[in-house]
Image (cartoon, rainbow, N blue to C red; front, top):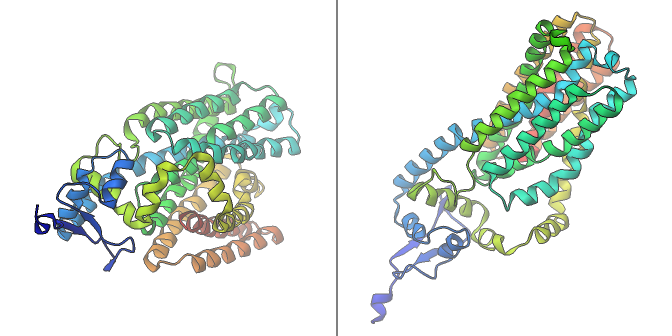
Length: 421
């Protein structure tokens, strides 16, 4: 065969923001073998012919397919994860709402014991997050995340049966363990579909599930504790745990059919959409990272993360942000100290969280547009500090309630930017 017959039929030079990607030109020869892109496809268990499909797309066609892909993700993947997160926090924060209707008195808990029950969840939560994400990377998210959702629904429902401090603190500890897989798993799954420049706003909306759960959870608690107190001989707080656990378990079953896996093995992706879903992430992180990922064991991946200074920088960022935002765990208790009735207290919890959802989405969208994280985080942290100072130093009811708006509307912007970073 002549040398002319062996010439390359296509050259892919991915354009990222008007510039050629650093990964270099990826070539697809006439035989359909031997290119870097095809190696990536093969390692991910995907048809190497998709490499040629990407190479043959015009820029206009690619933009059209990518837009359609993101629309699907935003209509299927994202709402499912958001509903997951809302239910995750509704179950987690149910205990805080039950204090207003007397769980502490019914179980003869001291203030220290009640605070321990609130906080012990995070011990189990922290212990299981890293192992869970390592397992998720080797599993199908469409089964893995709904499985743990069903388990945490059962554990959360067990809180309705506790008779004292020992039972409640045990349930809360195990609830932390079984809830741990969700949030880091959700962020990991999002990063398997969206590029870095698309992540901050979506993390903000996802983390907004926390805020929406507190708003909705307060309204659910108001309805349940008003209408079901004493029904079938059970206190209203027991009904709250039962009803919220049933909601979560029901959605876990539905989520199995809604949640996608990864770009290379999601059943409702075909042809061009699958090719673009994989290739745009290769552009975003580099061919070498993706092509070698299957050759790295879970332990090796863990060691690499531990050795990377950027990991520890983000870890300490998140620790400090979590400490600053710790007030949200005791939010119903703090609002309860303002001196209003039970019904008004539940209602007062809602507005700060709804406004916080809007401000966090806007703040992170602005960070995406400006392609900047540091100053958005520092600015929001400064506002959080002002709110905490007012809350700690003032006895004025209006000033203290205003400080809750400042804290909730600012700290989540820093959280979301840090997660997307």
